[in-house]
Length: 245
Image: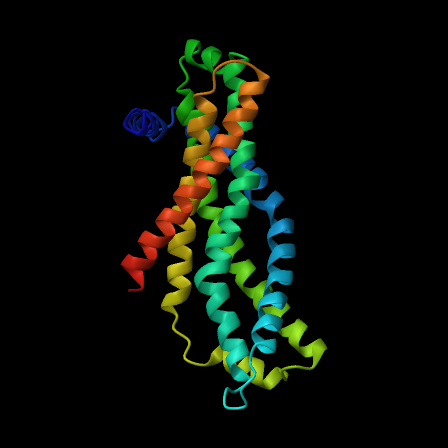
């Protein structure tokens, strides 16, 4: 079953990554997907990032009991947690639920209503027309969302500790700047691009292979979110091992 699914996925990706028949149509679809997959996800990304940054900062500060540990550790811990794991991975998991279900439902609905068959009859490659713009748009826009998430999360952490008076602004900023390695940002962007491909391609696969009626569209959407989340976690471990260890 797994081998069959993997083979079907690879064949669909081969069809997806063929050259678009019309560049103008592809660009139009790409702009549409930037809006649907990226801009419309901005609100939830920023909201969750701000509050999570504050939570991480407060939890770190409250768990520093020893006077031997400097308060600058709070800023350092927030920066590392946000850049290395929260923004690229947790936000991608959230997008897998929001964006992945949208893609699977949209394509699945087209499949059960025979719109995809109609595209085939008109000589259009439906995989290329429907899935490629989504993959391309997500791989381009998601890194910008993650960079914004990093800045907003750190800002949220600063606001939380400043308002509570636990850590001074100077200590927090010193901790953020301490031993900073720019490669961690590159690492976060690489993970984000890989995760963006996983979310859109896996969701597109499940939507494209939907069979039945409206109930099956919902099932495909659920399968897409679950499968994307599992694969993201697996590749998170793989990429960490390859890039950091």
